[in-house]
Length: 163
Image (cartoon, rainbow, N blue to C red; front, side):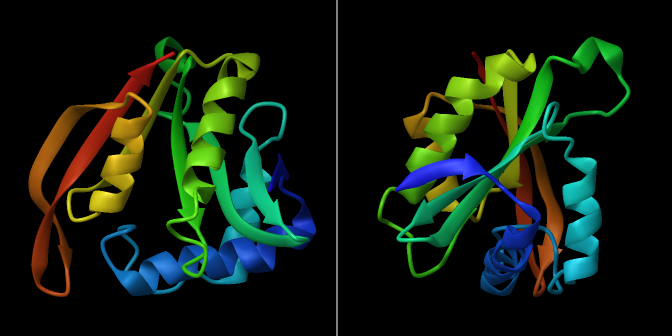
């Protein structure tokens, strides 16, 4: 498996992988699938020199992706903090793709000027929580019961790691 920077032509599969998480529930706070146009705007805002997006490629196929994004945009005191987001194709889960993506991102984050990573997720996503803990992330914050998905409430969690 190879990790490389995402390219424009990867956007349809990145979008599909994200929408798998939307349909699964509790892997994101989106309730409806995201259109490709919205994802193109998101990708354009991820200036590669500042906020990269990486993909995991196995046998020429994108099987997952990870991004570093701004945390509290335009707040200069927090410019060294990045929000990390990652998603793995549902057919590839449990095969170490998420670990490879997160490990790669942690190894290059300082090259982009980041010394702190934040992951924002829901408490009903134990797989993601387990991955973050495996890499040393700790729960830094919790907003109890504020996300409502299919009439079920979930806590909004902040996991962090100082690199």
